[in-house]
Length: 274
Image (cartoon, rainbow, N blue to C red):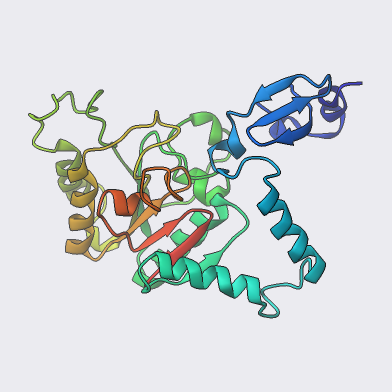
């Protein structure tokens, strides 16, 4: 019996996959199915794993760690590899950051939202249409790429407000590139006037390059404009860098590529100077 047929009997529909492939081996950029057919691995851990499969130095590092300890509970004790990685990340991100490790991108975004609300003592969050931030109750509340993610889960996290993302090729405001007067930034005047007072907004969360929404690269002025808006109103700027971090835009993080520093950002972790 194929793995797919076995899986259907024990996993719920919510745990479905985008293919029916059963993979038995993986090497480098290739995976092999049950009949030993070879496939180029375009999924790459759903666009978050740049390491390839079973790369020797990675396997060696994992084996070395397993020989020392497997799981001693970082919420109970401290241990060298945990601290060393955090120190390296702080060094690479300017030295004025702190690191929080989490189990998933959704959990990291939950933490980012909680941090923003805790620091600012404000209730509201502004997210962007066509965004994807996760499928937990809080992160699905700020995900605007597909109504299926939200279906039957209402009511969701309250005080979430929506803005249009800067798409110069299919402008949501019907403008032409170069002749738009940055309507994507001016929309916040209306949001603050008619929907939510800026003094009630804890954070604006944004993908520096929108992923599931269509791999949309915004103009530089958009992210710089968001930074200015946040500074003006005491709002924290959150970058969701799960698909742009660790070198995918040419710099270690897209915040460096766009030369815009967020208050909180995540790439399966959260860093903040707050």
